[in-house]
Length: 379
Ligand code: GLA
Image (cartoon, rainbow, N blue to C red; front, side, top):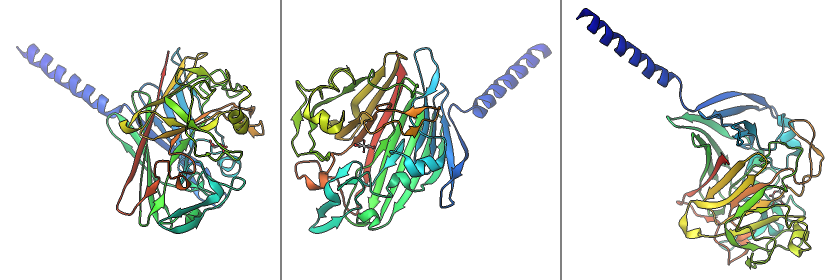
């Protein structure tokens, strides 16, 4: 009898220990370390979000930049698939928005001018005659407050920033939050929230440059892209949409079935010539469905598949045409022409000046809330 009691007692102890172990070994973690100091002396931290499979995403509170993102190939190897730098100073001085949060307005606003409720506004002009990606010091170049939140199945980095009234020319004090959440399905959700005390305009996005081969010395022309869009926005010579919404049928802009980026990129097509490749906003299908599948990218060499889900009406597919070999890669070597691509979910460029485009206005009392999910798998 004593033996039976002892056995039951031992089993209880073992099962308690296992429960303890499960508690001690969370399925997702966040590690925080120092990343560097900005040129004006602010210490910047790096947060490493890890899930139980091996996906690892590092982000810093300067610009909310995703500095590294390890995703698995078909053999199960997790490797870094985003372009970036090793040093903070490189992000501060020469980055073409690698991995950054973009705001207040992602993409271009013609001549930096728009009218809102009868008031004329002039934004910082930083791209020829135009305003691009929030101006001279957009959200990609500010220091965000940061907070880690670990729950049973998710690890989140909550980034907050208050953009003052008239910062870069935008009206209203804007309180912004961007939340990166990693789960155990190899998905990163990016949630954007904002409120303003005056009517303003807003169009936030994430500017990671992917190269799913994990070999930044290779270009991305052999990736297969799919964009769930029946039309796109043709642009003028300075990449401002003309206002026309053009059907993709019989054009190199038809990505409704997976197509190699390189397949038609060199076709003699006026729009491709203007963009020096793909650098356009697609008008996504099923806009009334909220969060839905919008695009994917696949690298047949390694088997990595990225699927993008979003509630946004548009997506800028940029084939890295301004990369020209002058920036040094974080793995040694250089970032050559088209060595990375971006899939920036967003509202259409220059919306404040196009009545036919969905509104980007945010009024006091309203809450701007949008979400995009980047899901990785391999096949
Ligand atoms: C966006 C734009 C491009 C370019 C890059 C940054 O994707 O559409 O034209 O400005 O950002 O280099």
